[in-house]
Structures are given as structure tokens and as C-alpha cells.
Length: 175
Image (cartoon, rainbow, N blue to C red; front, top):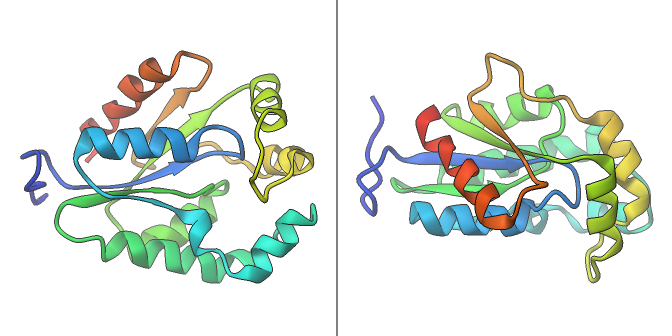
């Protein structure tokens, strides 16, 4: 039985906005959280400094680098309170999503999907982020789309932002 979000009367949601760098996890996640009336947290803020330094140097993270971070992401989501939360986290592989679900079993995933061309354009136009465009290839190679048995939705990011947010809000039907 799902509890209701006291702010909206809707079932509480623990949403992970997932996808490769440049797909809009932070922007869309923040807008979706506002629409749902729940807090938003960017999972990048939970990375240890060693992970950030590796990525900034153009070195892809290993699974060993990711496991503690994913546990923290799951814990943040699980302890978000009765209203739920939207949290941005790449969650590129099924085993990473499973690690989050160990802490927050009711998590649902919003996969922001885009073509390599759209993603490259966005990364080239972005400044002030530790993730260099050079790591896009490794992220795309790592990405495992949501499986049929995983709660969530896939949204194409090529549409205008309001359409992406509207499509993303279909996540409500997955709780």
C-alpha cells in the first residue's frame, strides 16, 4: 500500500532521474520535483571528492568507485520522508539501479534518453561541470536501458523542455 504525498494527495514517489551526462538530469529533475511538490537532490553532490577528481581528469569511474556512492544515493532516497523525493543519478547499469533499490525498494526510474548528437551538443555548450564531454562515449557504452521489470519510464529529451517535463510526469502512473 502506497502512502500519499501530503503536498499533492498523490502516492509518494522516490524518483531517480537517470541517464548519461548532458541528458538534463538536474534541469528536468528539478522541474519534475517542483511539479510533484517534493524535494530535489542532485546525486553528483553526494560523490566523494576522489570520484569528482577522477571524472574531472577524464577518467571513468570503476564499479568500486561507484558502490559507496550508490549506497549513499539509495539511503538519501529511502530517508527522504513521507512526501518522497526526486534525485538525479546516472544509474547507467541495472546493477547500479539494483544497488539503489536495496536501500529504496520503491524507487522508480525516469530515464532521460537522447541521441549521441543531441547529448554531444549539450555537453559542448555546458560550462562549469566536472564531467568532461570526452566521457560521453564511456557512459553510452555502459548504459543499460530500463528492463521491462523495472518500474519507470523513458523520455526522449529531443522535445522542448516543457514537453519533456510533461512526459516525465507520467512517472506518477508507475508508483
